[in-house]
Length: 230
Image 1 (tube, rainbow, N blue to C red):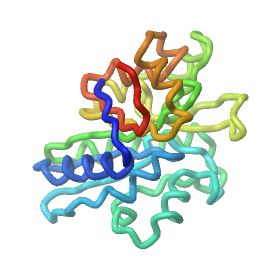
Image 2 (image 1 turned 45 degrees about the vertical axis):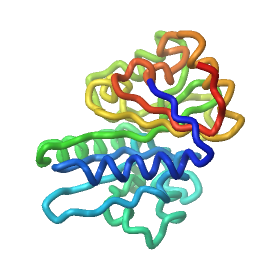
Image 3 (image 1 turned 60 degrees about the horizontal axis):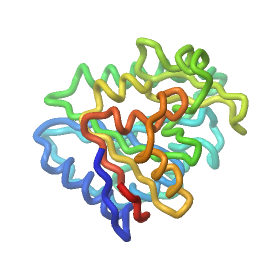
């Protein structure tokens, strides 16, 4: 895990992702996140090559058709007119689609991309919450956590009673660790300082602090404007 401290972390991270996409000789799948991580998208402006595909998709999603809730719809509203939308999979919920059906459909989309890709590289942009959650991976009691996330699946339905919107969907932690070659975390603002300090000063189990997967990942980079003491 490497921490990059800069006055403009969204810009620095977006430009880093842009350079990575442009340098890759082959297809690339980039998972995005909602919330504050949407700030980074403005600066992701790759060169789109005819011989290669660059595909964007939400790595976690709110299972809703509401424009102010669903991550993809928030992205589409905020960045309407940006070319990135032409290359982003629509992850809104179909009419009468249940969370498990929604997750299975998105998993099929991911498998299709992987099966058809040439020299595929997978990267992911994540946010991090004050409670240590990242993407749609939330802290839970150990049994509940592994019942929810420890499956041989790519995209999982997530239910948590404490959430205002109970149903989410997310890439599984193990799939991220095994298949995402580079992991980028956006953690800007003073409200992120405490969780960054805890992440760098002690260790927790994954079910207690899902953001531990950042430390477990072989190639993870945190971009922040906070002066974290390492």
